[in-house]
Image 1 (tube, helix red, strand yellow):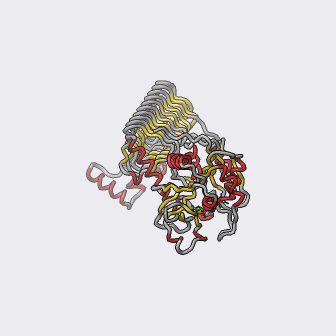
Image 2 (tube, rainbow, N blue to C red; image 1 turned 45 degrees about the vertical axis):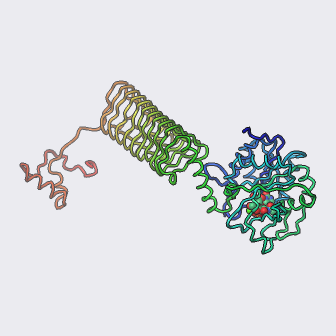
Image 3 (cartoon, rainbow, N blue to C red; image 1 turned 30 degrees about the horizontal axis):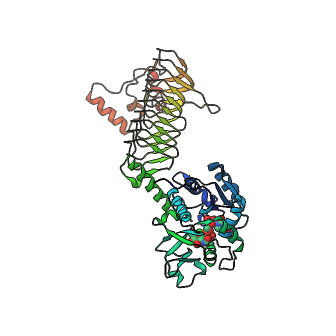
Length: 497
Ligand code: UD1
Ligand code: CA
């Protein structure tokens, strides 16, 4: 079936409220779930209706809300509601700002992140097809407290919406509630808005009173009952924010499983809305894929891994890793217990192993930093191998310096590269080397001094300890006792240790 084309649609997004129950310095509609703000979710759904214009009504903390909305949807008009005098007043401010004269006006709230574009399209299409003056999206809920109730006559026709605070005891029993999402024929809306009064429990201009006004004028009014009521739920406090976040995540994880991704434990897997996953990706438990992360085909990620704004290549394996703004090449291996900081780029088939931290490090194809290392501000050539326990000392306390390791170089264990360092192609370093300056291509650099042996040192200098006893016992088993072979017996434990 072809999608309905909504040619002359103005969408009003109400986002002027304070959101006091969030108890936050951040405006409610800017709180995030799934890596996108609440109002960002709403604007994304609204965009799917292909509206002629979108107007956001801003008020509370508009110095934060307005720029955010403009960044997400540059064409969005902004209407300022200085004082919150009610939803009817807010819509009036909006249609005036938009200069709407015809077509349909759809009203949505800025804090309902689960609302889909499909639901909005279906709602508006039904409103237009039925040629109604007013349509409302309603839902049947177990706990209707706080909501406006949909009052119907014996034939089931919608008569009015009565706000909770204005409802009679009998009306409070009604479980069909107004979601707040409403559609209007523009001509009726422009004519009726100025006629709204505020003689009610809250002293506000209620948008919902337009239902009764339309009925009095003999115009068509109807409600569309949305089965999936969570779509219209707003996040008023942090508990609701988390609950909606969980539901959104279920939806996103479900989507990727249908696209051919194996998710071993959906309950502990979190995937932001902008993430992109290839076919036959496997995600193991406890994994968070955040921001604009992309994962290539056949890659296996997790368990217990967080990737934010990362690009992981096809066939790669990322185990127990925390990474941000990092690129992992095809068939590369990362982890377990690796920390990839911004600017890390691991080439195809490369490896960043256990207890390795990297930052601003380009590690070439097939190159490996397998164990216990820190690599920062460095470029490691293709096929090179960095020894276990290597520390790149990139920062001298004032400035950062670069380290360049050539192709197929092999550096020893427990090295310190005191940057700036250049190690040439095919060069080597010995175990324990402190590398400064340049090692030419093909050369071997060694800086650790020759080992000295001071016989019987423990028995002499640590007499009476378990260490000395063990040494003595070993000495009795072999020949001879404690014996000092040169006068360097004065060496301190520090030097030896
Ligand atoms: C409103 C509806 C109610 C519905 C409920 C659904 C009215 C009169 N009532 O009630 O029928 O069941 O939503 O959640 O419309 N806002 C503005 N400017 C204002 C007033 C409100 O921008 O002057 C915004 C708020 O930020 C909020 C939304 O409009 O996003 C709803 O306002 P709120 O005061 O929370 O209405 P409710 O009393 O919940
Ligand atoms: Ca509300």
